Figure: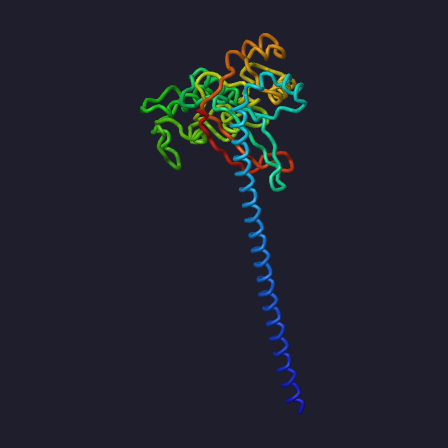
Length: 314
């Protein structure tokens, strides 16, 4: 009888353990299923949010181009902006090319739209070596020899021969890298190609809190000599010398009110020595090409995802 009872207890113990294991396995399966469902839900929400942002950016690009065409039809009014507003009692809203973005609210999202003409930056494929060296040094390469080396490496990347400039780089350098590749030896088609050039790192290209980056100065569509004062990034003003942040802010405020029609208008706010430097590097010049960029404005006022389109104006 005792033996039979012990056997029954043993059997019950096995059953209990089996039930516990089954319960544990079912709990794991349920947890996995719940986690998978939750991740699937999050993924679906992310996709939906991504599609919404993408739609908002495309809508902003379309709106900006429409506004630019409207500006083209009415730009003569800007030269008499104050008089027009005084007569009509309305604010003249024209989206002319300028570096400072216009802001939109689309589908409860804050979108910034920047319309600039191509002359706001210098064409990297046409830049003068002296100006290139100066800009490289302003972008954080303090040593003169090193700045010349980076500048010559950029020019070696673009030129069609294999002759190495002083401190520059041709295919023997690039083929010696751990992950070798050949230099372009042709015009740069995407400004991000500069990140492949010897001596150009992300800080030099994008800039830091202490200095601008090459991306502020160069594109593959701009002019070859001077920057358009309305479309130039504020970071480029370092070319004129040690200009105070207050003066830079004033320039930005002025071109948000209306564009500069001639560089002489800067004489009102610039000390003469800086104005002479500005005349050397800046001008007022339209372009046959504009670039429109729409970007998501994040809660901390930083830029989120962006889209860019280029349009010919003639």
